[in-house]
Image (cartoon, one colour):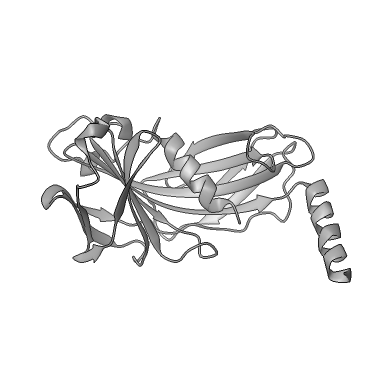
Amino acid sequence: MKKLWFLMIVILAAFSLFISACGDDDDDNIDITNPDDADWVLAFFQIPDNLRSGFMFEAWWNGESTAITEADVFTLEVGGTSIPVESYFYANEWIISGYDFPLNTGTTYEVKFYKNGNLIVSKNVKTCYPASCDFPATYNPTQATTLNWTVPENNHTQFISVSSNNSTYTDFDEELFQVSNSTRSYTIPANSVQGFGAGTDYELAVMEYNNYVSGTTYITLNQGVGATYEAMLKAKLQRLERARNQAL
């Protein structure tokens, strides 16, 4: 699972094309059907334990970059607790981030987000119930692969992901499959992603999302589990290299 966090970020970016907000949670009759329609996108990720602890927060501003400057101060409160955040300019857009803060799964929190003391959004949201999946010991991309998982209760949205990349990350392929929020089994078709030769790595993931709209702000909460499969030749070479180092 060493690259799961990288994959979670990629998936969230891809989801901006087709994740729909939960209609029962919309406020003010604002027609926002995906994050690209919002002024602000607020995202909460549950971070894999082997990389970080707790949750990560990121907010994206979809308007003109000149509307934000380095002097602006952003504040995030979750359940009445202030979460430290920092802002930075990356790829021609402003991103506000916070790291490694604890939240309980399947729990409702009031989220408040401010710019220079002015409230941007106040919304009750629910963290995802976590998925647990027994991934297969091996993965053969030329064969269909069935995943079975459990979730204590339904979240808003579920996606199954399969991805491939070469060792330098210069080549990447991904296929996403949306399933109903009550589904607990899915068969990934054979040849869903392409291979990139002997150094190809593959990753399978089950992703859970809760999505909300408040005014012109889109809020999404994510939890994911996954497994990485190294190419057989690459894994063999790594074992040989480890053996060589131990012998020296």
